[in-house]
Image 1 (tube, rainbow, N blue to C red):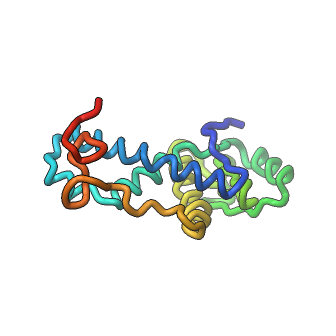
Image 2 (image 1 turned 90 degrees about the vertical axis):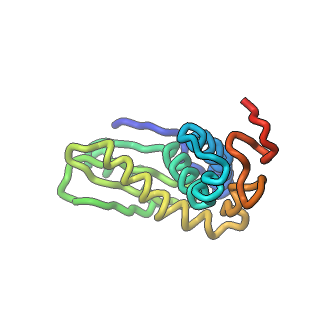
Image 3 (image 1 turned 120 degrees about the horizontal axis):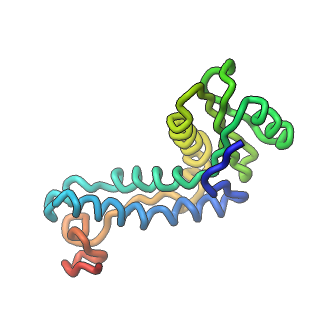
Amino acid sequence: MRTEGTLAPDTHEEAREAFEAAGPVAQRVVRETARAMAFDPEEYRERVTSDVVSTARDVLFASRLLIHSGTRAEFDEWCVDHDAFEVSEVGSPNVDRLVWHPAPFVDSVVAASYQDERDAAVEILRRQALGRIYRVELDAMEGAAVTDVVEGGSEGGPEIGTEDGSGDVDR
């Protein structure tokens, strides 16, 4: 069995904190990407929306999820050892390899089967875990949603490369 990633929160609070911590990083990634693409301030305000930064936050959060991969027998053994977990599996039950993500804070595990393309299955699993577990749980928690992630500056966004919209680039 192979394992990657580190995030398998034991509590709702740990899940919320990890999700919120990804917000500022996502904002910096989007800002630097816009800078590398040579967006002027007007184009930045027009194209870099809260949805863009929220998507980046989701990807960053999901990229940290603890993922196990192995044979169906290894997954079945894991399930026996974690019999309180509700199992949600996508893909074919006739395939011998799976990737899975346990979410202890909700006693749930999401799995995806694959034949040859492990990396593609991992990405599918991350999206499934985000949508089936974390989005549902975090949206239900007060304060989990990041709505105004693009703040400051005029007309809704900071100038490119600034934290406060002042025009001073802090590198």
